[in-house]
Image (tube, rainbow, N blue to C red; front, side, top):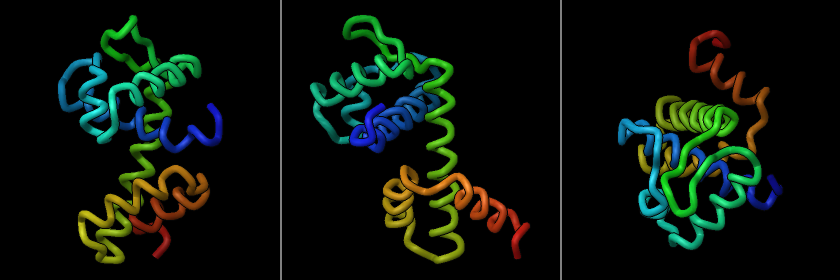
Length: 128
């Protein structure tokens, strides 16, 4: 996946994973992704093409979207980074719920594995 597409691609994967959990099914519709991310359906279609080429999703022509094993793994890792950052901003720094979610979404794509692990240890009380 190209560096330029990295952040957006991870946002799409995370949205698909969240929609799967909310809907209780594996298939996700383009319309739902567009609504979730506040983007157009053509933007979703372009992103799905790139995610399919990268091996992260499966989709019949304009049909439901399914995460592959590697897509689910990548989406889960992004979601975990988001949750750790959001928790740190909200519970430790006392940033508002809305702002902490926005900031976590921005940073989750760029933070190193080492830093996220140290934040997790800190939040779990292992580094105090």
